[in-house]
Length: 423
Image (cartoon, rainbow, N blue to C red; front, side, top):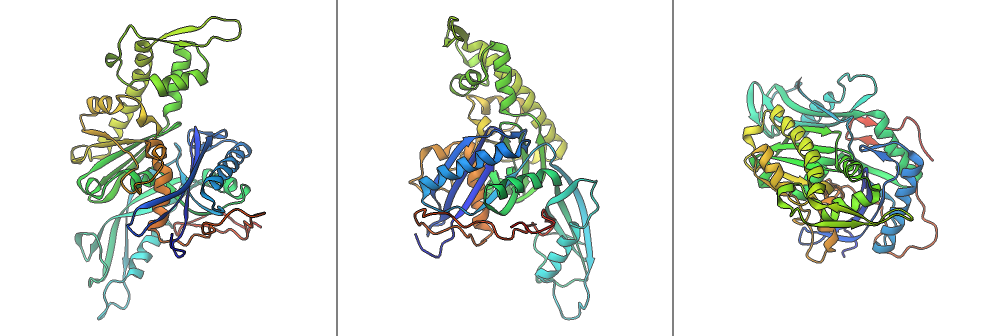
């Protein structure tokens, strides 16, 4: 590894798991993974931090596991944000340029236009997270992707604006700080996942990314290389596990194992005569579970989730423009036959998104699972932003790490989470 290359850390704080991935970009443009860790998420509900102490405890566990594997002193992280509080809207902004004689539109004009969007008045408790330009208009000329270098007086743009609750973002930052880390950047999780599982050709052609997590299902629709629509459905893999638990009258831990190892999203693809034996509680006999009945329970709930997905796609106005169809990722995408069910319900060609395209050849096979798409995407996003990482360069852990200092995070030019310095 070149000593000048930056190590980037992605931290995926999910409903069922907290995953951390450490990596850097090699000379071939591929992501080299130095180490990763995963632990159970104890304080997050439906993508939102519900218990800070438990979440901090889980983050510290994953730090310890990741540092042991990577030999890196982890100090700064790129973290994702999700949850049903996430909303999106479309808005048009404009500026009139001063001193336009013999001058062309510069990057500072574009940045000023984007900055103005962060000044929009939002409902109490909400804040703008991302401002994403869709297209620019110069002196009435529409359909311009990059106005820099053009001559013009009036500069306008259509924007896709993503908002979220200030409290949800601050709680994430509190957890990061109490775990003795510094937050380098925060990004909407489906956007992060798109870095890991979508190709540029798919984004250009038109594609819907559906990230099925433990607590939520996140949707991001791309066309012409730009995100056009985003939504969060407050249903995920956890509710499927709860249905299996109730339907089969078993412990939740057994229900999760059944779902992951033996579950199917299509009941007709499962032979009816196959049964699975589940250990009984103390002093009670084993329980026999029909795999066909298990699949019926799972299919019923997954149909509900995918119907919501289909509604969001149609509501976006891009239903007929998805030439590349749908890409499923996240832990829920590992469910057997889920892509066939999705294709049947939506009518769109569907594939499973594996985060393998940008990874080097010698990566651990476990990281190729869709459940790590967000974590890998966070690392790729950090690399693409060319932000300097302050993580130690491939040195053994020695003694107590110095972390903290003054943390004052400007969130994508517009979101100031801290009102005072934190020591």
